[in-house]
Length: 230
Image (cartoon, rainbow, N blue to C red; front, side, top):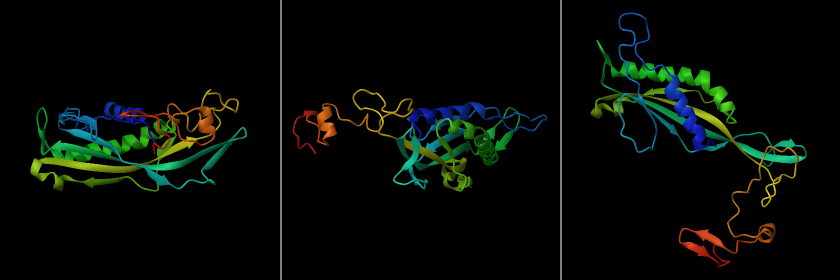
């Protein structure tokens, strides 16, 4: 699963790397409509302006991965576990019905269609390398799709196009790190313990090793000391 930091990096790079001026063709009208779109993540508390580009990272789901019992690698005698996750991404471009340039006006549908195609070309060119550093990649068996959603925006006098794509991200873990010392059992292992952050505060090492519930369990309403907290 991509972290929020990684998602933010992808969104920021898209915002600052795509050429938003329209039209691109040389001539007297080149760059006549020169207004950068408002780029934002879906769900953010923002006052949307137009044109706008909305990026939505949808909930992940499992995807096939080769391995037995989630074992994907043997690192110096220690097993690394993991699986692939399918993460849909939807990018939506919104424009006014009429986009006012310096000299001419342009139909919003043409501008929105132009933007969404630029975004597709940009993603195909730049995201593969960025995603590689995030242990993710574009899932090509599910092709990019572009849809005109203007019919759903007619009451607002807006135009819109929507691009849907899918990423494969990875979730990996191992059992090579001591949960209490943070020292790896395998020299040079780049991985950390799977459940280091999942150990509940107050649980002793003996309780953890014996598979016992914690004697102290922190909650929003205070600390519970009852062993039968679950």
